[in-house]
Amino acid sequence: MKSILLFTVMVVSIIGTSQPSIKFYNKGVKLASKSEYVGAIENFSRALEADPYLPEAWFNRALAKSKLKDYGGAIADYSKAIDIRPRFAMAYNNRGADKNEMGDYEGAIEDYSRAIALRPGYARAYYNRGVVKLKIGDAVEACGDLTKSIELDAGFAETWYNRGLAFNAVGNFLKAVNDFTKAILMDAKMTRAYKHRAIAYAESEQSSNAILDVEKYLQTDSLDCEAYQLAAIAYFQTGDSTKGKAKLNRADRMGCALK
Image: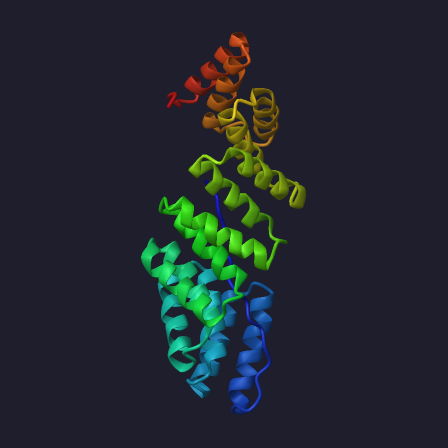
């Protein structure tokens, strides 16, 4: 299962602070926009030396650290931003994403919940919380969060995809098919959705559709042995034992035992 988390990027101009902090902060923003994160961090640090009570600088330095996979450093910076601005919903959201990266799922959910409490219409926080709940096996709760995220912002293909995963997990295969279809229509490059829609089709005994989807997926990822197993099951369901055995043999050669 592949999911992504949504960070909130905040690029703002600052007024009412000392000139050195403005200079270094704005330079940091410019460098970050070019993905020059090391230089951005250096400039945000200089801005904070001039004005340590600048929550935007802590926030954006944290975001740059996240991009460099320094999740511990990012969490510390987001925490400082929150100390200065306790109602900083975006900082809670992003800190939650970094906690997730470090395997602190309970802490991530807590931060997303704080972000939602501060901003009830925060679609990204609902999405992120739903993804983490799905990861820890709470598919029912994940469905609720992802549905709320879609109600607030229906334009993000990943939300439909992840809700499809959640519907598969709870056995609601018809709704899963609908969500994967929506995700594919929104993002034609999301080929992994074909694999999981194939699972939903196979589970609901729509074997021909499952075959079409899994074969399309295998065109983009020929090294996924689980997909060959899925194809084998679908072919066996249609009575085509020759193709079913061929797919199983391919999976076996790849070292993937049938589950």
